[in-house]
Length: 282
Image 1 (cartoon, rainbow, N blue to C red):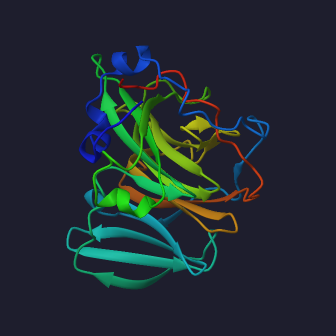
Image 2 (image 1 turned 180 degrees about the horizontal axis):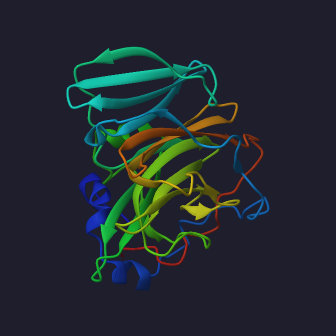
């Protein structure tokens, strides 16, 4: 049975890849219903090509996509001393400036999202060969909001494992993860794939203990290199927006890619057991 503290969960990046890859997990008390849908069926799809919504931005400010009351917003830093928000009524835009402040609030050190009765974390770490990897951790308990402010020692279990990117992307590591809740204990995991010379943005719907569900998404144009952590927001109706920063060779832009995800509450894509590579403590 796996028990850990909040500090250990948030420090997933310090875990050894070899330990994660070789360890096995007891499944007797962690079992879940088997998947009830075709794991290769598309769960999310891109609905329009990515497009630039702001140019020549301040990269360390990052980017954040949010949605509230059906209104989509993208927050970024056009300069070191300014924070800008663009709003739109749909993921496809048009995006117009609505507010600004002195500086953008920093994003959490590691992304976290809650969907149904699960909370998922994602973290980046490096193996001995300095290749980047994404580690996922999922916990299930009655009050996901408490996860942010209390110890998990007596509240639930966290099952961390290395996320293995699906085939089709460029060679190199997986880095800079982002998460968005899709409902029904499902999430959309975003990550950059590639190396220091060039990276593309990909996404994969995941469920249960972080198992892939449906097809992966390619979210960035081929002529740019994506940098920093991407951000996504999805409405209960399934409309979504992914925002990210990219270099075009002459500067740094904010880009947005509209997506749509299935929202059928009857779907139960939770896996029957943690995937290979999960960590257990007896």
